[in-house]
Amino acid sequence: MNKEVMIVTGAGQISMAIARRIGFGKKIILGDKNIKNAETIAKIMTDAGFDVVPFEMDLSSRESILAIIAEAQKYGEIKYLVNGAGVSPSQAPIEAILKVDLYGTAVLLEEVGKVIAEGGCGVTISSQSGWRMPQLTAEEDRLLATTPTEELLDLEILKPENIKDTLHAYQMAKRCNEKRVMAECVKWGERGARINDIAPGIIVTPLAIDEFNGPRGDFYKNMFAKCPAGRPGTADEVANVAELLMSDTGAFITGSTYLIDGGATASYFYGPLQPTE
Image: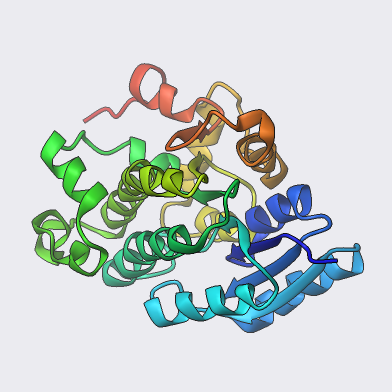
């Protein structure tokens, strides 16, 4: 019996939580730049009864993205996409953040959107961080949403001299993710498919722990301490939202971003996390 095929990128806790929640009975192609990470998560899931194929892929490369799509198509039509791949402000320089988180995500949504099966759906993981930067103009948002992927990094607002630091690069990337989802949902809709975005706040993962111990660690600890929820979130809580978006219950939801941050963004604008400068 042919199984429905799911592509999952980023062999991390959020990707695994979502894949475990909705991936039972499906063929899961799990891509990560570090094949050892993909193999580790694949083994954990296989030992729990899932059908997972680890695959080495680099989100910053169109050729690599096309390769994982081709691998998935060996098993049938692609029905689901979960994009949890990316790098954080403490992990990579400005250029890498823009190439992976911004350009790579745009290419992935574009290429999967060309082949997604009717009735298919996807989610990509952005971040609360994109909600914290000053609002862009309507024209800047339109450019982030609709500029051809190979021209994205040539946009004036994304040129290195206009990016202050790695956090700013990350914020721009995540804002772009949300705008690309809005534009791509129109194209996905032409194939009878849906695509949405989840913007998590502080979620306890190995990556987040790196951030807690990094140069901005105190900032992040203060953020979840002073958000209305008073704590960081878990990968399973992100999976709760993904399960809604990727099920028939969410059939009328597409092109949307769901902020799941314990109220940290609200506190940033209207509570104790408001900037003092």
